[in-house]
Structures are given as structure tokens and as C-alpha cells.
Length: 133
Image (cartoon, rainbow, N blue to C red; front, side):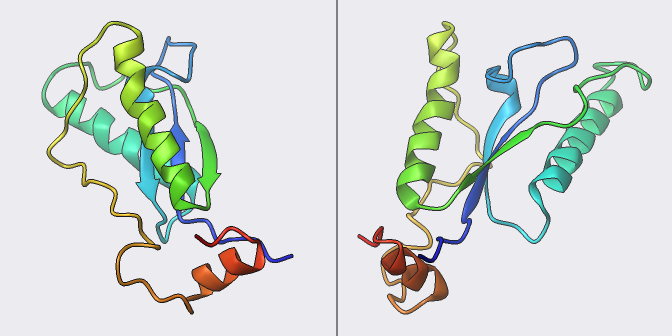
């Protein structure tokens, strides 16, 4: 049986000195990219650390993130939606307000969004696995 293609990643990393990977500051969702998940984690960690140093929020030699991280491969829009609910619920569970970021785009159901091709490689793989809507 054919396996669906990965369409997104749930990337998780922890701040230096934080043990739990469920910390709301270190869990994010990203659409499939030309880079692999490990490289995306490294680049996101580096860019955010560089920003903190540039704004003098930490010294240049102070560790910000623990090395590496975890990844969860997501292969269906239902998994993307479930993961979004999980990530959005993290701050609320520990008494923080709901987070909203201007750079986060609402999920449109890609690649099964309105007007998708039922003959795309992804749709064909879902059909073969019995998971096409």
C-alpha cells in the first residue's frame, strides 16, 4: 500500500535550561520545505538567537536553545489541524493568553484545499492508502 507524502512538520525544540519539549516557546508547525526538518530547526534557532543578541536581550556567548530538536511528520490535513489545536492550546494550559502572530498564515487545507487536483501525486497516494476524503 502506498504511503501519503509528508506535507508538513511539527518542529519541537527547547530553550536552553528548559526540559520539557512542550514549552510553548519551542513548538511550531511548518509546511513542507525544500530543507529537511533538522536544517529548518537549526536555521530557526540561529535566526531567533541572532535577533536576541542583536537586540541585546542576551550576550553573544549565552546559549539560547538546546541543541537540535524533534520532528513529527504530518501527512494529512487532519493531522495538520490536530497539531495546530495542540500548539495553540499549549500556552492556555499553563495559564498564558492565546498567542497570535502576524506572520502566521491560517491553514487552508493544503494540499487538499479548494480547487486541488484529485489526480495530484499526493491525492493519488491518499486514495491508495484509503485516506482520501
